[in-house]
Structure formats: structure tokens, C-alpha cells
Length: 344
Figure 1 (tube, helix red, strand yellow):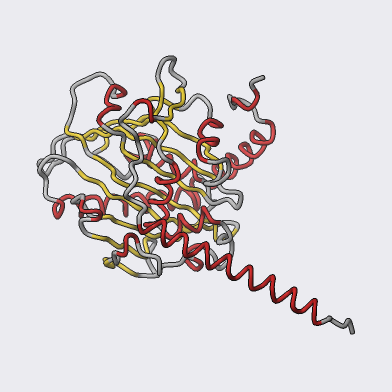
Figure 2 (spheres, one colour; figure 1 turned 90 degrees about the vertical axis):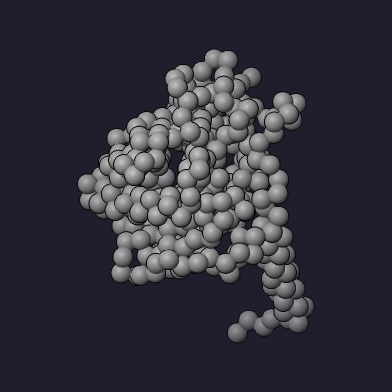
């Protein structure tokens, strides 16, 4: 039997103590960060304070947000997003089984609207008038069958054909100005701090008139997709400001709707399953009461999960697996990825 000296035991105990203290300090730091996570602006109106990157359209610059602040906000309201970013929560027993629901955004408690393990959308929560902005912050949780893939899931938001499968009011959704160099975004994010940015650009959305009397709406957002080393993904978006209106497409302007916060976190829970958490605070704009518009948003997103599930489980499972393999090969070769890192 190997004998362990008292000095070795002391060293081991010391390391464990330091490890525990470090974890405790990180948790305290996160609590402090989330308590003030919404006080810093994401964009800067003053041009000299802005950080920009060129788009693939010559002459069009994209203002990059304060990524630390933006991802703090997302992690504050979405425990699954926090798990995806921090890592260590994928695989069997992970996902919702590993999230920490004790950390509350701005100290506000969630009101549960639905909780049923037997349903695809197992839980829906809300916080009314979040940040005193008017509309409620809504959060949906679903456990999905099929391969976890952020780009494929994002198609149900950003691809107009897939979007219309669950959102009949959508007229147009498109990426107007994709960023020219993804590595410029990754550098601004702190390279790996929030995973690998696989997509970033300015997007535009326009809706049709709603049968209940809601006129068409439009949005101008900066959206992106992050991929983590364990297969998790984070789809995110933030509304652009008035000083970005020159990026709007030509045409008659509609009432502006605003997504104060939007994210979808995906964490694999096995070889062929993943958990998804959708967080959204959407203001329809105009003078519409939030008690009338919130149920529309709630049911619409539930429908999205209902459409996406059969795609990932059966209809598109093979297609998604093929995309995963192709992207793995593509990533290893760095093909078709413009990069300032390779500029002499």
C-alpha cells in the first residue's frame, strides 16, 4: 500500500481549498455582474466610441456591440445559455439537468405559465415589464430529439421558407449585411470567451398585417451564432439603434418592433438529443397593449418547436448530420473563411 505523507495530504487539501475558493469567487463575480448587467449600453451613439467591422458590402460598416455586456444579459436570463458558455453541462445528465435556476435576472422572479415533462415544450416562464421596458420577458424550454446543430436550428428563425412554416405573419426575413471577416468578430469577443462565432450580420424582418388589426412591423437587428467546443450553440440577436437606420432596405417604413433581448441556447444531452431554451422580450411598437401581444408571441414560439422537432428527429436528421460532417472538414481546412489572421 502506498503511504501518503502529511505534507502530501496538506498539499492536496490546499489545492482542493483553492479550487473551491476559485469556484466560489467565480460564482460571486457572476452574481455581481448580473446584478448590474443591464446598466451598460450595448452600442455607442458617439462615432469615436464605436467599434466597427466591414461587411461583405463595400463601404458598409457594422457597429459591433459590447459583447461582454450583451452576453452577460443573455446569461442572466437564460441558465442554459450560461451553461453553454461556461461549459461542462453537455451529455447525459446535462442540459436542463445541470442548469442553476437559483440565479435570477436582476433579482426578479420568474412566473411559471406551463410546466409539463410530458410535452415537447416542457416549461414556459415570464417576467412582466422586465427592465421597465413594457413587454414581458418570455422563456420557453424544450427537450428535443435529433442532432444538436446551431446553424440548422437558426434556419427556423432566419430562413424565410422555414420561418413561414410556423410564423404565417412573416413577409420577409433576410441577412442584409454579413460581416466580411468572422475572425474580426471573434477577436472583438475575446477569442473563445463566448465560443466560436460562426455567423454574424445585420438582419431585416418584416411582418404582414395581422388579422386582429395589427399593421405590418419591421425590425433591424444584429444577429449571430456561437458554437462551443462540446457541441452546444447560442443563437442571439439584438435590436439596432436609430443611428443605424441608414442600413434599412429601401421602401416604405413600417412601425418599428424591437427585440430588447433574444437568444436560443442549445446543449446536447446525448448523441441524438439536446435541450433548447428560447428567451425573448419583444415590443411590437405602436400603442398596442402588451397583454394583447404577449399571447401571440407565446403561441408562435411554441409552434416553432412543434415544426422544428420532426425535422431534427426524422425529416432532416440525415441532412443535419451531413452538415455537421461537412463543417468539421471545412473547419479543419479553413476553406472560404476570410481572415485578418492570414493577412501578412
